[in-house]
Image (cartoon, rainbow, N blue to C red; front, side):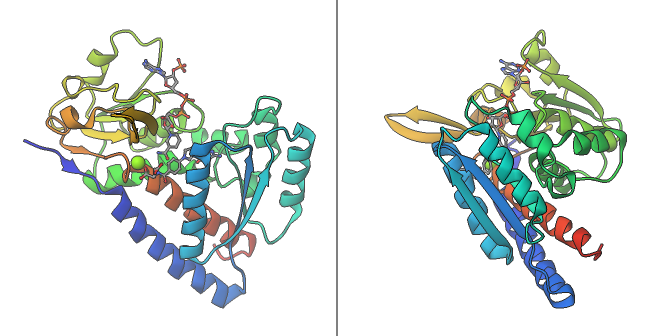
Length: 289
Ligand SMILES: NC(=O)C1=CN([C@@H]2O[C@H](COP(=O)(O)OP(=O)(O)OC[C@H]3O[C@@H](n4cnc5c(N)ncnc54)[C@H](OP(=O)(O)O)[C@@H]3O)[C@@H](O)[C@H]2O)C=CC1
Ligand SMILES: Nc1nc(=O)c2c([nH]1)NC[C@@H]1CN(c3ccc(C(=O)N[C@@H](CCC(=O)O)C(=O)O)cc3)C=[N+]21
Ligand SMILES: [Mg+2]
């Protein structure tokens, strides 16, 4: 038996179409175009791909994007000043500071300065707190997009065991919060977890957000489980660069019930949810929601 392959690329395209229609309606009713500011410090080649995909998606959805490319050696104070300027700019509804930041810059300081009402990444501690206590706020894009894909293949997570591998503030922890809201029984695994394969084998839903290429093997997976592969890893195969996930897709697809590929799985959903958060932010700013 081979798993259903979850087409994140297609789901994301559908989402972008809906966002484009809603953005056009907001423009007609309130004369406002949702604006997203992306701040990129340094020349990380992986970041460049994401930034390019974001620009494409904003154009497709009829959103305005403002790009700020700063040299790698930019002092922290300058990044903080830019964030303050964007906080004060009424044409900017969303601010995204691409991570990782160069080492002279304290990421927590920068993320904490982004106005929580413009925090479309959902990384500000206020939005993280809101998610954890069940108040409305911005939900981080990757977990939000992953949850949409999970909802597409199962309507009831109640009492199901969900295992999230990874406990980062940007993926693992908020993913666990969303699954908990759906009444799943949630386990968060990480680098100190003992016998990770055995823990994974008990998962009805397995989310891998680790950053270790092809780590999760087919024999770690419970037959029929939903497998969401968040990992984006660049590796060399026969001297050629290739992107793979944290899941060994070829062995996992034989065991899982449904699985996301990499690329064209979670990645495009992250970007679509960023557009969604930016649209939501603009709606709130003009009192249209
Ligand atoms: N598709 C998308 O849109 C996105 C993809 N990504 C990708 O997702 C992956 C995870 O990203 P991110 O959360 O930022 O990564 P982090 O490096 O911040 O976190 C990785 C987590 O994995 C855990 N971990 C590391 N090694 C192991 C191991 N051998 N066994 C079990 N757990 C382990 C770490 O544990 P500990 O806490 O103990 O160190 C940590 O909690 C990356 O590949 C990244 O590129 C990220 C964001 C968006
Ligand atoms: N402040 C901040 N917010 C982020 O959301 C953020 C970040 N920093 N830093 C880096 C990670 C990673 N990330 C991805 C976004 C899109 C794809 C994506 O479009 N992936 C496509 C193409 C992959 C490719 O060709 O490289 C796919 O999986 O099909 C992947 C990964 C967002 N991140
Ligand atoms: Mg993907």
